[in-house]
Image (cartoon, rainbow, N blue to C red; front, side, top):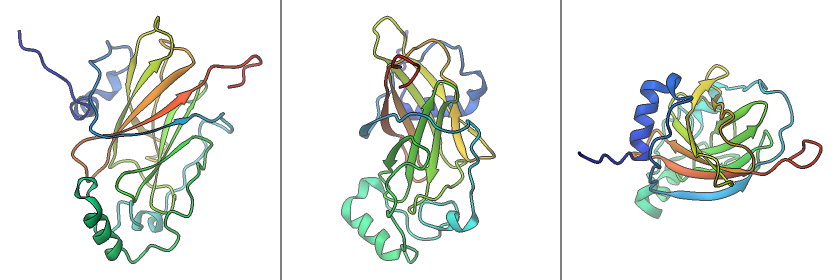
Length: 215
């Protein structure tokens, strides 16, 4: 019998073909990421699940957006690539001025230095991933692929993998985690950026509920 090791990139391909059937299936083998980014504590949820995401063409024209025409830095090419990208960017006003979550979630800078991410989880709304440009303005998620692995703190509960699919007219990547795991747990977020060959790993921790139903 031949042993096949699933990589994070392979899981994303499988998820793209069958995202609608991902819930309730047996958890695939754990992926091995190429790059890991820091763990952030999840913040309490405030506001409705369907809070609108406003995406403008101007935001998409900025570095990190789908209509940006400048040079994209390659994460593996070091300082020279990032320096070339900076030299080519004529729309840098306001870049990296906002490095805080807009929706109360866990906030990350992407390794390409042109995208920001915000991961948000609540029991009522499930998991949502928002993508931003270099100015932390909302952009469409159609170019991105992602899945999450939920790792419970309890050894008695299984790890769960969910593939993310676009919601809110392409404004967020979302998934319901379900009842297989309970708080507290860690969410490993695997995101493949358009210019990258392999997904990047970001992590957030969801704390236990306190008496009174507050995280």
